[in-house]
Image 1 (cartoon, rainbow, N blue to C red):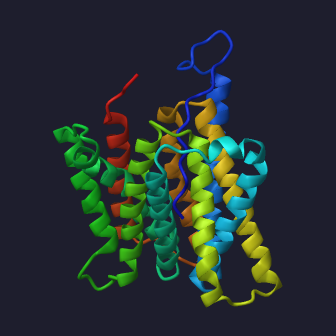
Image 2: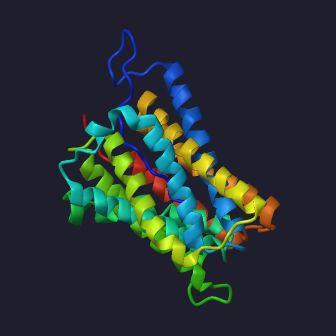
Length: 305
């Protein structure tokens, strides 16, 4: 399931500038990012399992309402300030993009292995790179364009359109990656005018309101095990959100962001032990190309400030 990135500067450390976090803060930030990714991967596994018995809108609703409750409880004293935004339309668009990405990803993992879906999802940073110039007017060099092409090649190897093992459901994570890329682009634009907590507030509230209006048409009363898993899904969602906020607060994004690729380890492990999915050679090869090109684009991106 796509994560909700929060752009925030690292916290200042006594005796150091904001751009010089202590080794302890960096280590803490890495641990928080690894925990956030583990929570997100656990959510993916639960969504895949619940999708065998319950409709997707119910699962998405449970994910969002739990996040909204946590956000409202934690941020309650600051709500009068956080609801103020200079770009309400952009906030609504961003929240809708993440909601769409969440829905399409859950539909996808119902039918394809977690490792395959997660590999395709990592196309999002490459799509951001491809859209950086037309959307943000940011220059993209030839080396980064080559990395984008290599990444798309890796995605085609994983999906294998026209091949004997092609599944139409593999298109869903690709749609997720595209929506998530648009979500990240709007996040970058909003970071110039709104605080990260304001953006987090609108993400939780918009998704909750939309899914609360939709879920009555798909309602299936969960049994005790279903409710337990839905509650666990919400707890993992809250853990993911706040661990990521803390990670970006105490450590530089350039240090902790690459650790998001640990998601493939979790996806492969959950897929193997919970669902019996063993990634084949083609999936492993394609995932390697996607991750490698994504890391290359990340470390080649222009540094500002």
